[in-house]
Amino acid sequence: MKKIKIALVSSSGGHLYQLYMLKEWWQKYNRFWVTFDKEDAKSLLADEKKYYCYYPTNRNIPNLIKNTFLAFKILIKEKPDLIISTGAGVAVPFFYIGKILGCKLVYIEVFDRIDLPTLTGKLVYPITDLFLLQWEEQKRFYPKGIVIGGFV
Image 1 (spheres, rainbow, N blue to C red):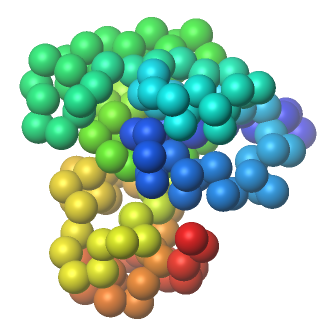
Image 2 (cartoon, rainbow, N blue to C red):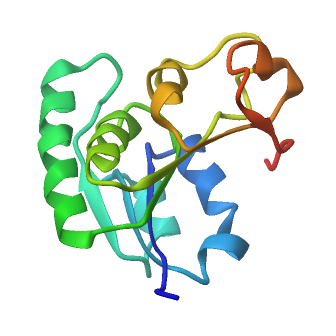
């Protein structure tokens, strides 16, 4: 069995921290990170392989275009088997390019969104292989999602 390679993709801040909290799981895999060039990412991921993407990503078309080209470049180079993300906007180009390249996609909807879906969640839901939820209430937006409970 070949060793699995994982891309962990997220904005900095709470999105990054939620992915980082899965360390017990991801640390046993060959991996790399894609996030913002910000102090929290530099500190948390000091000893990790990482790529910095363009920000801000929220409704920023120029950075979406730049991150789409960046996603293609990184994913061609790294060839991950799996892309996992908690959002936000940077996940969108990585998921769509990753899907085209044959990557498996796992999205974890964020903990603090109970009553409304996130824009990123809505955009990647149709193409994910596994869509994980932290609240039962989120199932009304993502009926095929699997509730795993909160981990923050």
